[in-house]
Image 1 (cartoon, rainbow, N blue to C red):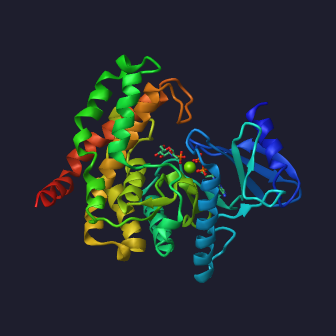
Image 2 (tube, rainbow, N blue to C red):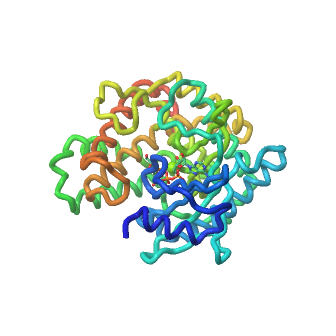
Image 3 (cartoon, rainbow, N blue to C red):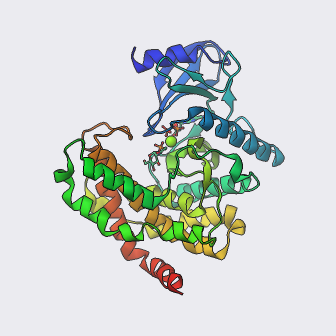
Length: 367
Ligand code: ADP
Ligand code: GN1
Ligand code: MG
C-alpha cells in the first residue's frame, strides 16, 4: 500500500470535524510524513501525521509529551485571552478515544486541527520575520517555564548531547555502510578537527552553571506558524522533541537555520554566509519574551549554542550520508552531503564573526 492510500485509511480512524474531501502531502519537514486533509462543506482542515519510527522509538511516549505540552500551552493562551484555535495545537481523538493510532506496520499516526490563515516560511525573508520567530520561541519558553521538566519523557535520548553525536558519527564512519566515506574526506576531517569543542555546553550544564529547562529542541523557522494577515507569530508546532534541554539549544538551532543567507541545502557555497543583522533580530525577539527568565551564564551561552547546533546538525547530516540516508528525508542522493557542506560553510563564517563571544567563553571557562 502506498503512503497516500495508507494516510487515507488512517484518516478514517480519527474523529474528523467533517467528511474527508481531499488528502495531500504537506510541508517540508525532514522527519515525519505530514498530510493536509480538507473536509466537505467545512472551512476546517486537518493535519494528519505519521510519526517517524526511525527517529522516535517510543511514539506513545511522544504522544504523552505532546498531550501534556499542548494542554499546558492551551491554559497559557486562555490566561492571556488568546484564540485557542489558532495559538495552540489541538489534537483530535481517534474513534477509540486515543490520541494516536498504530498502522499495520506499527507506525503511529495522529491528527491535529489545521490552524487556519497561517503561513510557514521555509526561508527568512527579512529581519522582521526572524524577530517574530524569536518572539514565538521565547514565548514558548516562558509558557513552559512552570512545567516540570521531569514530567517529560526523553523522546530521543541524548538528542543534543554533542559529544555523543560525535561518537555516533565516528561509529557511522567506521561502518561506512554506504561505502561513501571516500567522497566526503574533507568534510569528515572538518568534523574531527572540531570534536574537542563538542563538550563545551554540556560541561557547563553538568557543573550546574546552565539550568535545564523545558525546551523545543527543533526550532527551525518552519516550525512556527505566522498569521497570514498580520505576520505576527501564532503558534509553535512540531512538539515531538520537547524535552529537558538548554536555552542555548533552542536559540542555536534557530540561528543555524535562519541566520544563514542561503537555504539549509544550498549547493553554491559562495551564497552561504552568517548574517549578523539576522542574528541580532532573532536575539532581540527571543530576549524580549524570555530574557527575564535567563541567568547571565545562559545569555552568555547563546552564541556557543549557535556554533554547537550548526556543528552538530552538519555532523548529523554527514553521519546520515555515510549511513545511506536512513534518517533525514532526501530528494537527491547527495542531499545530506550538500546539507552538511552548507552547515560547515556557515560554521566557518560564524567562527570568524562570532569569535569574540566564543573566545570570551573559553577564557571564562579557564578561570
Ligand atoms: P516534521 O516533523 O516532519 O517537520 P511538522 O510537525 O513540523 O513535521 O509539520 C510539517 C509542516 O506542517 C510544518 O512545517 C507546518 O508548516 C505544517 N503544520 C504542522 N502542524 C500544523 C497545523 N496544526 N496547522 C497548520 N499547519 C501545520
Ligand atoms: C529535523 O522535523 P524537522 O524537519 O523540523 C530534525 C532536526 C534537524 C532538522 C534539520 C527530530 O527537523 O533535529 O535540525 O531536521 N528533527 C529531528 O533540518 O531529528
Ligand atoms: Mg517540522
